[in-house]
Length: 474
Length: 166
Image: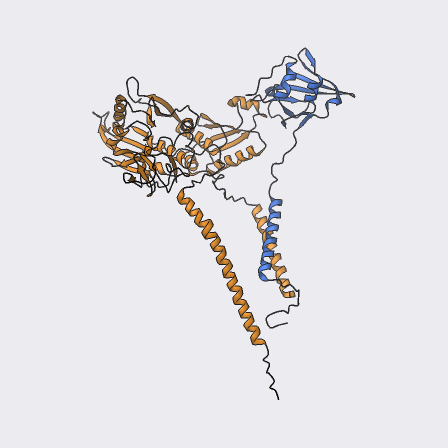
């Protein structure tokens, strides 16, 4: 190594070290943050940002936590993000052990309770997580509670059932978003949808709806009602009398999707085509619909749109009990619509004007969301893929609310990857084809370069070698 | 010296530019790591729990509890459970002592040492979720929270009921 080269190397190292030291000193005075976590765990969601845009008065957030330790530092970090987005938001972390008087004053009975105060209203949040705090802010801003009526009496899963087939998570989601879920049984007595219902959810009837109930729901929809109907061919309920007037037909059967299914069960469908611009599809990239049935969208009035459709390789098996899952002549080829929405507006004359300048007409708006699967929102599936967001979007759209908060209280520990056959093929191609192929290509390229250099060196050496003349004998 | 560069004898190493670049980058990474570790705040260290009464049970001849006009001596087994007495938290009380049930105290624990002297603890009320009970030394500036499960059987000896944790 020449001394010149050594000097250059030393100079380069000194420059590199100097750059690192100067960069570190410069960075010490500034705290720019970049969230590189896979789930953007340290960035407030767009819904929270939008929510904070509506806060126009002082909002105090008091988190009751052990003042030292990771929970307090995480809470401080999170609450500081709220303050950054809106300076009306102020926050404090209070140790309830060290401040028992304050804990008593706020009625705190558990750690991690957060109290939010805004314009004389006060709500509590059960945890210092973005989902919980944003929900509490939503409740504070809304100032009232909407009622969502959940139909019962026809074999629907129960809101109080915390088992995998129950709807306790749906109930919690509604409660977190300042909705009151009201069980309504229209199968008994005088069937009429209560006027308090902002929307009616029919979440998987297992037996045919009695005629008076269907009539009551038809009447409700005609008068600008909002309804979500989840149905399945596995039940004996026929939703068509309710749906067909609005341009949606329930095809029944069992949708099988060999390309996009969870595992080997082709009926456990992963829906990845969400073609609609409807707010119901916003922020949803995939859904898990176990044993879905097909829908036919044929709008007769207003607008009807397909919210979710299966892949082109899917099909409806009209007789799933036959035992054969392969595509057969009687099957309906895909893509199959498995969720749809209808929006119908009409001007209704309500009689005499209520006063001068007041129009005697008003607009009635019927909204309907139909899903050909009645298990995707149960506790066992609500948190899978985008199911939770889809449900919250649907309820928000039905009740004319802004986007609801669906962030779960705790960041998911695992990130589910729907291992559909199509994805398996891609993975196989990458792991068996692309990666080894690129390595082999690189090795071949390197080998070729080395050989070329060796040939060049050999030629150069041959040119430099002195030509020896063979001495002639004699 | 050849025409292409310095002459290389057998076994002589030549520092190639690629190897030099790798060395520099590696060195930069090490320096950056060291600088980052020096500049960043230390992580949460697992600190030992605060000690309210240090030592061993054998250091004390008797331990007794008193509340009002009632007094009870702790058995050897109970004493062993109270020495050393560890706390979950130690802090300067930001609120009046009455908020902690310490003005007046609900009970007193007296640790009589084998030599001269005694350690006295004032026992206050439960924390907000009843998982801990406030204790402090008379005239002390620090306040401790001790597990309810540890103190409740002792307090029960003098009729002081500690509500179970919520």
